Length: 320
Length: 116
Image (tube, rainbow over the protein chains, first blue to last red):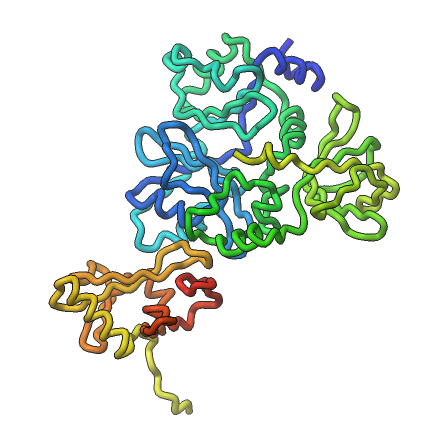
């Protein structure tokens, strides 16, 4: 019996002692090269891409509009054959390419979609970030290892050539790694408040609201949206922020549903999933800042009297 | 019938700005004060102005003669700059070279970047 045939609870138990793997079909990959690559990306996004040591791994940065709103999170990693890979959301890939091409004016930069040529996997479980030792690396050809966005679960992402897929999966299964379900991955993503494109990452929200301060350099100089983001940060003007929410009862709601408390709109639900481990629903929502009531009776969409727990994210864990 | 004279959008440089370009070129030991004018992605608002004193035009540059000097503009930058007047704001509170760009919908606080 494979792990995928077991319950979510059993899968979750498994990754406490073993390593689970998931093929990330939600990820897109671009190959970018040219002498001005890092200079251009540095001018278009939030993090300091110039002074990062790419031999040490990957760096994430946020592509923002001139109003400081999020287009997508990009992870930049060296492509040993040439240039760099940009890892982004598959659904955002076309927008990302158009955005970069629009701002490529006099620069020596070329960009290609290589999503169909790569396989992106997340490994999650104890010591997963170190378990692919040099010995393993010699048996399988990994294009690059990418720092995981998870904080509370040991995890690493790997990028491999699609031609190596069977070889890599066989190798990982020999190491007793097994596939976990998308539902479990979504539960972990929501618990860890990892923003996802079209849910938490849209052009309605800025990186500070999404608690993505760790992907912003506040002293690197200008980039598109910098003036707005710097002002929001300096004057502490963020009015809402991403928070975890929980409720017990099954209700008919949709993504984007408003949370109403005492007649006032206090938030917007961006993601939710049933969590069988605790027999409740967990979600992410942008909620008015400094909202310090942890348990409320709220109206969500057309559903009244929902007992909702609101959990602000711990700032210290969101920063590098 | 429309009696308005048709003026193609071009890029021009004021007498004051040209004077300062010539001064900078002279300091760099350049005999001819040719100026590359362009834009690049970045800056708070999206696009940032670029000025550079150069020896001659690039292969596909548009060449504009004004105030006794040549301005070189690559074709993609020209789309964002057509109609722009390059001026110079001097003095203690001056900003240096200033772009009066009719395509700019918004500019950032320091005025060095714009959006279209």
